Structures are given as structure tokens and as C-alpha cells.
Amino acid sequence: MHRILITAFEPFLQYPTNASMQILTHWAEDNPGSERVAVTTDILPVNYALTEPRLDELHAEPFDFALHLGQSPRIEEYQLEMVALNLKSDPITPTSPLSTTGPTAFTSQLPLDSWCQVMRKQGLPTSVSFHAGTYLCNATYYWSTETYRQRGLSNRSLFVHVPLIDMNDANAENAIRRGSRMLERLVRLIETHLDSVQTSLA
Image (cartoon, rainbow, N blue to C red; front, side):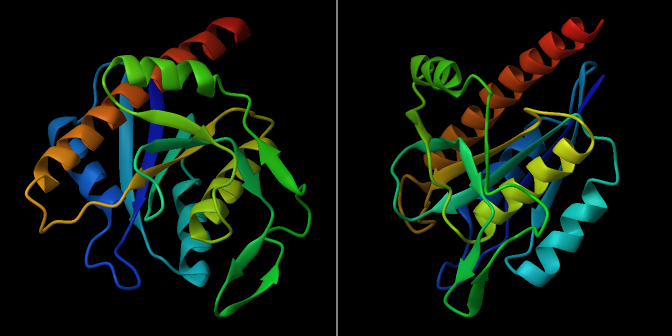
């Protein structure tokens, strides 16, 4: 059985909610897992000092894959992030590396272009992004990828940005359901990926 970790973020700054949290919560209510996949979900704090130790706690469990979700106010479609930078930066934090021993960046070798095509065929506008920012979305992606690399594993993590969802908008519930459908499709793609990895190692 494959074990997958899926995280989202709590609300932050001026936003009363977080689209990633809304999507993950909705998805988890309808998807308790299956005979082939066991899923653990968690809502991460938006705080460098709290997020890194929380990820360390989560990664103490031997998950086969970590999928992280976060919201972005600058996008209108789902974005699969290809690059995680070794960079910490925000208005109140001095710019510094996330890791003193890690590389400048991690670049995903997952078949993200193919996954985007699958998503779009399902009516889920999705693209590949090459910049996850320099705040906690990027940091979470980097830290997770570094954890797997230290264990000798590659292509075991992914970060996905989702558009904002205005809960006062008449289409908010539809947006959450669409995000849940995106997440379900992505979990199935990850499951297939893990199957192929398992087969190659057999």
C-alpha cells in the first residue's frame, strides 16, 4: 500500500480562509483512502519557525510521497510547481538559505507536462510553473524534497498552487468542488507514478 501525505495551509495575512485548506478539507471528507492508498492530511501553519518542525514530525512517518497545496492570489488555474529554491524571504525575514547543506534548487523530474494534459482533459485548467515563490510554499516544497533526497529517494514530492476562493462569491462552493476533483485526479496520477517506481525496483 502506498502512503501519501497531503498538506495545505491555514489562513494568513488579510485572507479569512485559505483555498488550499478548503479544497483539502472537502476532498478528505469524501476520500478516506482505499485498499491501495493510505492518505494522511495536515494543515500547516504559516510561520517559518513552526512549519519546518511540523514537517519534520510528519516526515518521521515513512510516506512514499508528499503532496503540498498552497494558494496564490496571482493565478487563475492550478499550477504544478517544477522548481523549489533554497531561499527564504519575506517582508519581515532576512533573506537566507533554507538549507546550509542543500543545493541551490531542486528541479522535479516528475512528468508534470503529461499530468497537466490529463488534468486539462478532465476540464481542470492546469499548467506547469517554474517559480513557487520565496515564502512558505517554496520552503515547504524544498524541505520535503530535501528530506526524500537525504533518504536516497527522488521524485517523491510536489507542490501545487491553487487560485484564491472568495467564500462570499456565489461560485465558491463550485470552486471548492472543482479543486477537490483536481486533487482526486492528482492523487490517482501519483498512485500510478508510485506503482511504476515500485515495478522498476522489483
